[in-house]
Length: 157
Image (cartoon, rainbow, N blue to C red; front, side, top):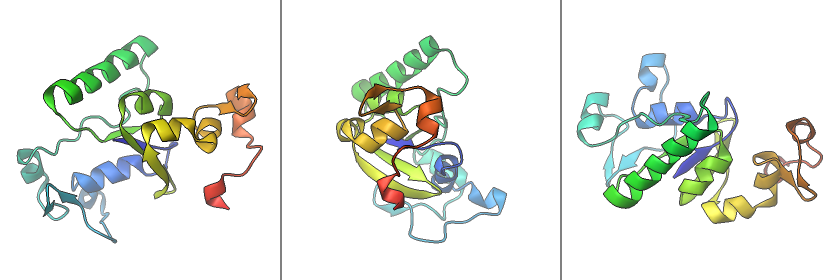
């Protein structure tokens, strides 16, 4: 599972909520609940979560790394999932790399899920292509072109 979005979208906060580490920053889950294997876990001590198998290590694993290392890390994640049955919630800005290994993805903006779906579906979505992959209807564009959005994100309208 991929949790995608730009800097400040809420990816790390979501991970901290799942790991029950928000209280250390005077935060709290105010709506809904967090359930793991049929059990509500958002009120458990973080050390109890670790004993149940909820471990936080994969917050932006590609950040600041050379492309070869990023590819190797994502290969390891994919192998662990396929061969060992390890599940991952991968919080990542590198949408291209994350959607290559994920089965499903959520895109966050300002702490809200604005789009979700199968990884293949998200990779083909025109908004995702333009705003997160840098590929518009006319092909690949530079970041400078993409940062000045030519069309409005439909989910913000």
